[in-house]
Image 1 (tube, rainbow, N blue to C red):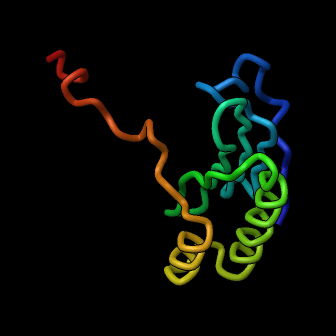
Image 2: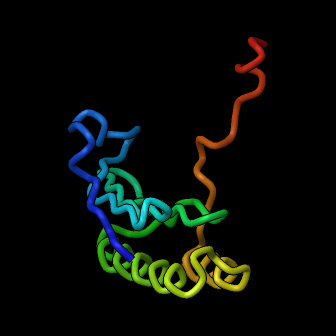
Length: 115
């Protein structure tokens, strides 16, 4: 699996997202992404995208880099084995890392409808 560090493809302005800052963004074989966002006020966020599995793992600052590289290694191992995440992998990964859907995935339907 070939990983590419795409962090520097983003401008400094683009790296700031809400209350976070994009520290590291790696893409593997143009099919897998693992990104680390820091925050001054909140937990750090590790965004993962691998096949049908995507979401955010929230971590304390002191654990952020260690957890980031651990997640990247686990996803790479599964990708090399199966090219797509197995149901078992998704269940185990989700349970171990408490992966969550991004909060901004949901819509305020009243606002969307102009109510």
